[in-house]
Image (cartoon, rainbow, N blue to C red):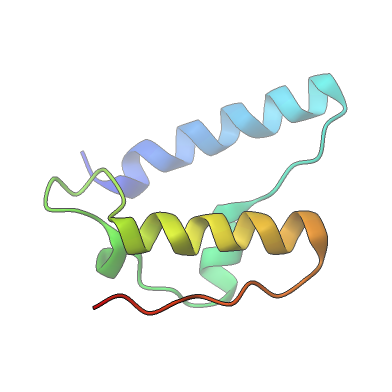
Length: 77
């Protein structure tokens, strides 16, 4: 199973729960697509979980969506 194979049904469930709870919904799949981010660079060897850098990018997208402010990413050595 790949990251996207797991991500798409998870994303649909989050969308459903957000709608039921009248909570904000952040479509990370759409953000990744719009920014043309190659997720393969941020997925670990198991092709399922994000790397540390991938999690930082993901968190930045959530931060930007919630605050409207740009998140400055730090480079990793």
